[in-house]
Length: 438
Ligand SMILES: Cc1cc2nc3c(=O)[nH]c(=O)nc-3n(C[C@H](O)[C@H](O)[C@H](O)COP(=O)(O)OP(=O)(O)OC[C@H]3O[C@@H](n4cnc5c(N)ncnc54)[C@H](O)[C@@H]3O)c2cc1C
Image (cartoon, rainbow, N blue to C red; front, side, top):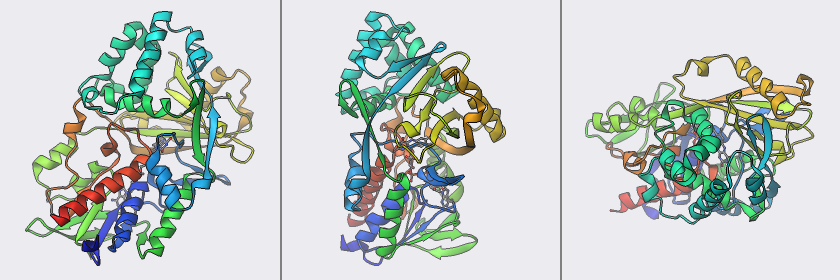
């Protein structure tokens, strides 16, 4: 679309969404600058140096339906870096680890009666076929689960997972939010008996670096350690630029991909009603423990946990998906609103709590297995999506002419993923182009 030739666009945030927005605009001939607060690109998908091992701050797996990701990999010549693995899932239930995620595992699971097991299987089959989520958007997830599984089934399978992720928001989640997650993983299978998950050889950084290269080749600029402090609008309400490190920079269009909760502070000229709409959306933070171990804890990639003595909803043994250089990597996410006092406790407390649980998951575990440990934190790790969330989301086109925004909340009801960031970036750019052509 030649209408963007020479247009000056600032993108805020160099996570996958910001990078993809930049790429799409550069392909249309715009002049694009990306501003990133961090000292690296990637946002939640960024990699860090874990005592000599380059690894993501948070676990990343790829599912069969992640088509926007596959299209981007193909565009960047990276399709051959995609690897698929038959992964295993476990369920730690009341002091014992059981297999999970296959028909045999469901049948032998002790926490449900036969009727509930059949109803669970029917729920998964039905949910995998849903493509319009509007109806489930209006339904509370707990009501929906209890309708399928009964009170006891809900308590056995889901109650503690929800409470440990959403805390005081447990009763405020839409059924569509869960339904899309069941569908995404449910469709990522070799067959009914085998789960198939993917990863990129070299990690998510391979994709991020290729995006970075292409952006620079097309003339885009990426500024790191460059937090945007203000989005500036003229008295007419039209965007005139941004302030970065105290310096004003002129732009016609500003596209924000940072958590939208930052926007009212960055753009104080936004009308009160719009600011309130943004403020009404709650978020859950994460303090994610990452351990480098000498031995694996279980053979599973993912273990769900429902045990009164364990305060995390699960652990992810990433190296059971992506075998990273002879060591074993385990992530343990502590999700909670950042207003919780526990969120502010020292990293070491989260690490000690996690390692205390490992002995339960594998009685052979000993503290000598630990080679390194770290905690990554993100304040906006999971949007709280209550029933009716489609109608709660503010418009991506803000009331300030030239200012557009989206973040991971706009995936709704889809699961948080790099693939969804890529898709949303295209949706956002298309909307800006359509608006500019009208
Ligand atoms: C625990 C966890 C597990 C996950 N698991 C998976 C998975 O298995 N598979 C998968 O595909 N995805 C997974 N994800 C999600 C995936 O990481 C995200 O969907 C994706 O990284 C979001 O990208 P984004 O660009 O939309 O946002 P972000 O990654 O949030 O990027 C926003 C960027 O904006 C920057 N920023 C903020 N404020 C400013 C400012 N004022 N000025 C400039 N820059 C600013 C931030 O530093 C950040 O880099 C997971 C995420 C978490 C937290």
